[in-house]
Length: 185
Image (tube, rainbow, N blue to C red; front, side, top):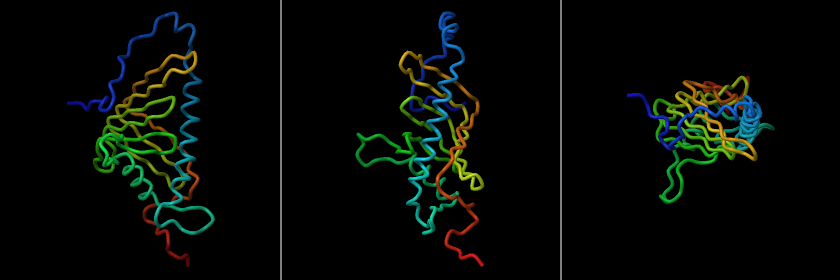
């Protein structure tokens, strides 16, 4: 049985738009640009949040290893509050992230909620690139919903797989094999 994409949400059906709206709207390039800009801002905010990662050096720029970053993202998505009236998950930059579970380091039933877009995926791999100091999500069976704005209609996109990112981070990322506190010789 294929994984259900709308684990946490019931997404609208994908009805073809009317011909009148096709002529007026065009491809929706600005919506994608806003989503990309939103992800870049998210990366910056996430980078600031990682300043407090345990084991980071006291140097001018904060340092974290890829395993710490991946672990923090997964722990945030899987957070379950003691007060059951509060939502599951947590803040990741300007996004609210939550998932139903983690399997082999991947998030299952992932949802990212932003002010102008919601993203859901059956599974997502958290990718941290130490060379580029960036964070990405490789989403499988994903739905991206751009929420309606002033004068805009909502947009629903379905993808077998899509990568969100890379989101540049404002910290120095080292690979898992590097030790943060190891003195240089």
